[in-house]
Length: 497
Image 1 (spheres, rainbow, N blue to C red):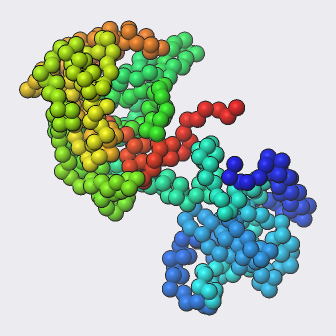
Image 2 (spheres, rainbow, N blue to C red):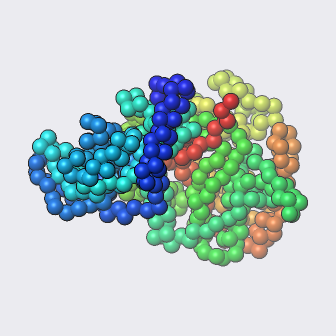
Image 3 (cartoon, rainbow, N blue to C red):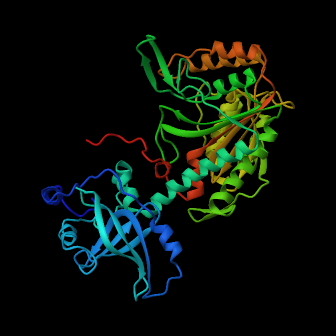
């Protein structure tokens, strides 16, 4: 544990702080007051007085609040941090009442206080607040991690994210950037006429993607329900209804599957649909959206991820899935149309398949094993096998394929998009084929066709392009984060024993 103290010594420290809490109460101080009239943040003062010469002081009084991060010389010098920055406090008996000096002795690192004072720059050049009064706002009963080691234990960081944010400035910066990234995505789409909508998280049928759902139960309706694995089928209903020709949702999805550096059971997606366009328009939208967000948030489209430079400036390369497989394996799977022949070719290059795998699924496995790691710079992999894309329109030039693309950056799938399937008869056929396929899986949910969605399609859905972008992976990319857990405030974790 990075605090470098045992459980017993932590308990002793906590008891000491509780005694100080009681001492504050005994002298009439409320250690947890209701409000504080703050008039400036640390960052505002750092900016306002950046030109203040050493040794000079301004006469204007400011009210500043924050957490004590360090105390020196019996509290004469305090490092105070708020959500914007940090600033030094100078508390001296010549400037504050004697009673306040007694209270000063009851303060600890981690306490939140409010201060009143003027701004000065010390002879050594440190911008400080010369405190003439202060007020305790929250007494901290647990000590922060020991200063020189900080909080580096990954397990503690994820379980106690609040502590991670207190101790690690870069963690706060990551989540501030996450917020800005999502805001910029939303603003980009709204400026281009997209309407933000909401769809159900509780659904009677787990549809819109091939994934194992989380199962729950609705007591009043006496029915099993599923947490949303994708919003797709509900968003398309809205397109059928004519709510808008451009719709989007930034949504939470839940998939009861594995956890990895790129996967969390609960994750955030952008999903959008635009009428009267196809997947070509979605490619342009994807690269313009991501490059614009990078420029707005980072000030550049030239980023570096884990030491690798990536250029997000459009246009991005396009390559068919079969072409990408041929490029990196020297095998043209368009010549091996039967599943057994394709499986035999895959085996030659060390890719294992299973009995029952279709031609398209075999190609997908080869792509994942042999192609994905090479796709570092942004690229749209287009024209996927029909068997692994049940919601996409057939390719207009090749019936084995569909008009689908996945955008890869740093080897990851960042976006997935289709020319959306609008033929209700073809859609029913593909849903029924999915049901047959799922019978051989160990999914805990019974597979069923979404009849209401098919009824909606019967009324006519306009030609449309659809796009999904994984927000968490995009944030990882734009913040240089190594794990999806680093960009989710409270990632899913196994309970501590």
